[in-house]
Image 1: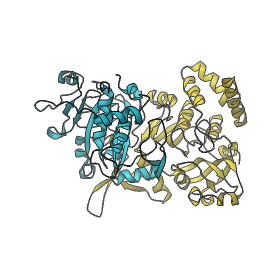
Image 2: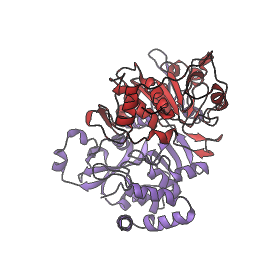
Image 3: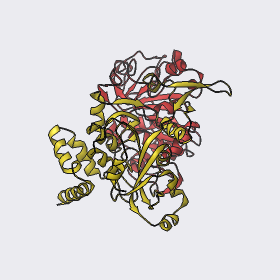
Image 4: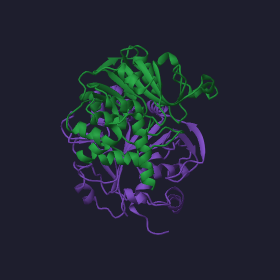
Length: 252
Length: 281
């Protein structure tokens, strides 16, 4: 096998988000998390549910730009919402901004809600997702523009925002990890502050700190993000993403 | 009914719900008819796609109630962005699921439904009218999603009969039945008007919009164009791209409008066919 690319490291870091997840819906946004989810199901989390990107649940493993060969269920948007509110889902969202307590923004950039500097998608399902079921974030470009002291609009609800809103918002809040093109992070610092979990091979701690718009919690020596196994590499390269779409999201 | 007859029943200032999702199964022929009308100051409720973009571009929207606006294969709609960035529309943003609950509350004639979704988010801080409610069973303080009562709903389905029974044949109904149920008057456009017996021959789950909730049926072949209307047709990606590119400058938008929007529905469909022929040649 040729050398492991950064994108492939990110794929297994994303796959690990769904380790031991149980029989829940894996909802990946972004190419790398999508490959990761399919890899998790093809290996250590075979019980995961996954959609075709529209409304059908597919079984088995299928390539990124293909349709599943076998349909095992139907999951239109209304059912996804109901399943999400019941807690049986782990979503990986791809926000434009994330802050140190896990607030995430996909709505707009700027300081005037009624006249934003840059309009993005809107809050989508982020508020409901975060207060109802496990949520992680994927940031293909770790930078001070993406990891900011305070998001312009709270779409995904962070630990501090949930605490301010009260017990009903905190009850099921479960922000797991942030996977970036440089590192893996979680919210295990004091008061759920973002903490450096591992560095991707070839990345220095100083680079991550310089690319983050707030102070990261770093405890002792930071380990390296795990490498994919030979079998994982084969699945990524030959089965799930044979056309290397992953390199478009994370440059080799 | 014709698109023009539907629009004649609408009034400026109304709250209008538009079915579909993103750039999927949108009642575009009805939207185009609104663009040609003198309606204005509309409050639009939508899981937004090019319906919202076009209505914003035409200056028809005073207030937009939405969870997102996206063209799916192209993430952002340029006209919606421009309308927001110029402060042209009043924005009321909800979690996708809150919109579902708002429509459901209206259809049940309730003033609100409680939810966890939205708590702790910018949805609350940007909307001073939102209130919480304390559960009488255990005291949890939840968000009270207000009913989204609609003056009119516009949805597009694959088949309908002349009485207003609608049938969808694609993978997702989205929330079209709730748009109809939440509305004072619901108008259903469809690819083809068929005999009732033909609807009844389909799977019962395809028949989720019945005539009790529908005020009028509009025959509109290719009426969802350029959004998708599976299985009748997919999204016209080339056309969607040209829609986005045309937003790049006032001159190109004027050209696009003259060709596609300042004509009636028949003219639109003819221009679309001609454009496809040109592209293929």
